[in-house]
Image (tube, rainbow, N blue to C red):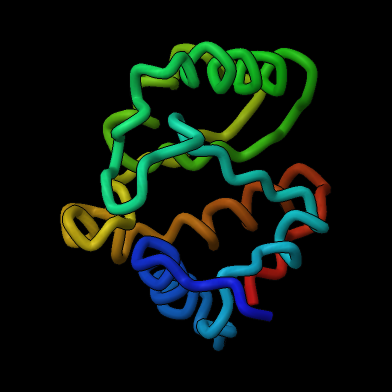
Length: 141
């Protein structure tokens, strides 16, 4: 499908395979199959200059992404929030942890993947929570 696979996504795929003991299509960066099941991936900064991570962190994206997180937390129930990395973890105050599950770890970036992301089993934790709350588990394959 021509959608490249960024290094962080490759690490996410590795953790899915390890956590759920399934095979994942690792040759595509197209995550439409997840979004059709209700998965929303949201970075704290939505744009960057090519090869310059966080180059647009001061563009005001956090105002937008904070509002999205807050609205979802207030208006939905039994969501799972993956807070991966320090920027994401700083958003926990926007989430009603009495209504939702929050799973935190290091970022799946190659620079930090071994600081707690690999082996954290976020996908099985998320699916267990969803099933316990009578919701459909995500097919991460």
